[in-house]
Amino acid sequence: MDILTLRIREDLRKHNQNMRVQWTARWRWLQLLVLFFCLLIAFSSFLPLSLPLHQAMALVLFAPLLMLTGLQPFIYPLKRYKLLISFLTIIYLLIVIAAVILNPAGSVFQRVLSPWAIWLNLLIPFLSWCILIILFVRSPSQARQYSLRAQPVFMNILIGIGSGLALTLHLYMVAYFIPNIGQPLFQFNRDGLLWNLCLLIGIIVPAEELVFRGAAFSILYDELNSHFGEVMARVTALNIMVYLVVIVSNQSLHPFELLSLVYRAGLSAISLYFVMRLRSLLPGMLANLIFTLATGWLFAL
Image 1 (cartoon, rainbow, N blue to C red):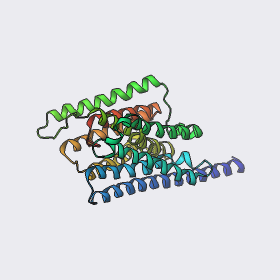
Image 2: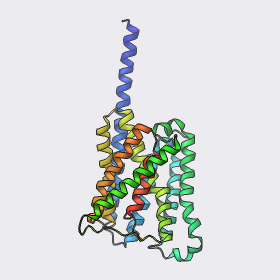
Image 3: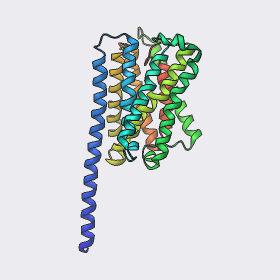
Image 4: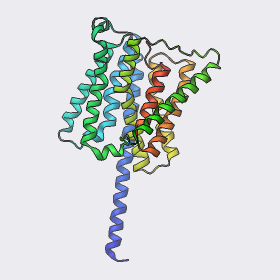
């Protein structure tokens, strides 16, 4: 083996080591951001605020912190990325403030805006996904790394809807046989259902999936070559910690919510498996949307 080949191998080894150090640092940074988000939510629970305001606080933190954390790799390669991050933070804050105002359960402004509430609610997912699609198109390589593809569309939609409905049905069947579990009834009115649906599609589901099934999975599985079981355990634990803090701050920690957390851990594991096998976030997004909307405890109405 000649000297040139040895030098190339040595340079490649050093490059791989440096890249592993960088990706490990990114994973630690991602964990710190999620932990910071949880601490802020926990701190807000001690403030003398009503339940709708506690939920509003969680939303205000959820959108800019988690959404922009997942979008970091799409933003940094662009010119003037600092200005773009500031702009997107303001935009998402405005979207969240609009969502809080339109909340039919806790907003006095909603009565005044009721004739326009349907169209204003629909603006939440429309504006959010316009921003996301523009960023995804501008960074196709990063979009592929995050498994942001829908093909084959019909199969991914069918898998996502089927898994979400199956998990939700199993949860309610198990809850039915547990006495005094506090199983919620479906009491969504039309305005409440539309508001929850727009909020989940526009902010909650994409932020959660981009951070945990996009960024976290890509770092651990694709870049650090961790075993899938280890990736599933670490990402799911981080995901469940966020939901546990949110429901505690919403003062809704009841037996059904604790059981829902167990099923949500299963949902996270299933979604991660879909990403690994199908390389698509679409099934996980649809399953998350159906499960969260059907359990009905994230934002009370």
